[in-house]
Each structure stands twice: as C-alpha cells, then as structure tokens.
Image (cartoon, rainbow over all chains, first blue to last red; front, side, top):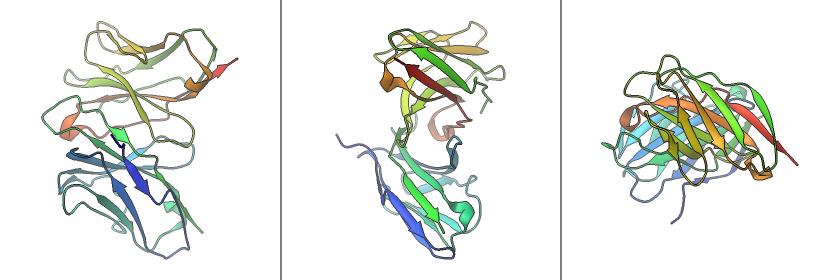
Length: 116
Length: 111
C-alpha cells in the first residue's frame, strides 16, 4: 500500500508569512509524529497524536507552531509568522495502533521549508 | 529515553560487512534498541529493533550485549546503496515512542 505522503515537498516563504504543511499517514495508523530536521542534524521530535488527540506537544519550539489532526487521519503542521530559524525539513511519521510496545515508525519524505 | 553514542563516520568496502557500534549504557529495562537509517534527501527508514536477544531480518542483524549497554548493527554485504546516516536509539515505543535521533553514524560504502 501507499506510504506516508507529505505536501508540499518544498516550500519557500518570506519571513513573517504563515505556512501549512500536510501529512497523509498510512491508512489505519493511529499514531502520528512530527519531527523537525535542521541541516546536518538528526530529526528532533515536535509533537505526537493518537487518533485526533494531541498527546504530546513538548517539542514544539514556540507558540507559533501549531499542529492538528481533526479526524484522526490527515495532519497539518502550521507555522505562523515564519522566521529564518524555522528553515528545516519537517518530517511526518505514522505507526501502528498503541498497545504494541514496539511500534515501527514509517516516515514520509519530508517538506523542506526555506524562510527568506 | 536513554541517550546513545555513535561514531560520527565510518567507511566500508563494497561487498564487505559493515559493523556499526552504539553505546547505550543508561538504557532502562523497558526500552528497545532501534536502528533507522536516512539516505540523502529521504525520510528515515526503519531497519531493525531488539530488546535483549539478537535479531536478524532481511536488511541487517542486531547484536545486543548481555548487559544491554551496547549493540552492533551488522550489514552483512554492504552495497553502495547502503551509504546513509545510521541512527541508533533507545525507546519504549507506543505512546512514549518519540524517537531521539542524535547525529548518527555517516556510513560511506566505497567501491
């Protein structure tokens, strides 16, 4: 079946603009994660959903970052008033239902955001 | 989640085994060892995971020491397509399963 998809693949924004990044997880996957990857670094956790519930948002760097998953499938990461330090690749991952302690996360290709 | 340490880079000749080490001396009893890799410009890809016993799948083998303080990922016959950054992580999985990637090991497979 189809893997995790993300759109757009590339986004260029002017400083101060709002952006919205979309993630389509694998069908049936309950858990969804967002990560941020700066150039030359490993991905860093942003937030986690179980169905539509956002259970952990401890990694969101500021209140300009907002994520939602209203129907428990597609998720959107929104960044308001973008800054140059927001430039990074934003990765989405989904995994099998909870209760399985060894969930494998399946990652999308990421959205590369460049803020000018 | 336990912190892991890996060498920043390694080279391997094509066709030879690649052995990638990882230290996780503070791993807790309910944390699994996960390995992912990231090929340039792609999202991370799951390779293998284990708790106590050695594991093998079609991609690799995972050797975990008896005290669980370190592990080795083995790619038995490395190809040029295995050139990537390899991440070793310890995670409880499930709802506690956000992965802490670190910087990983850049493996370069050379002809």
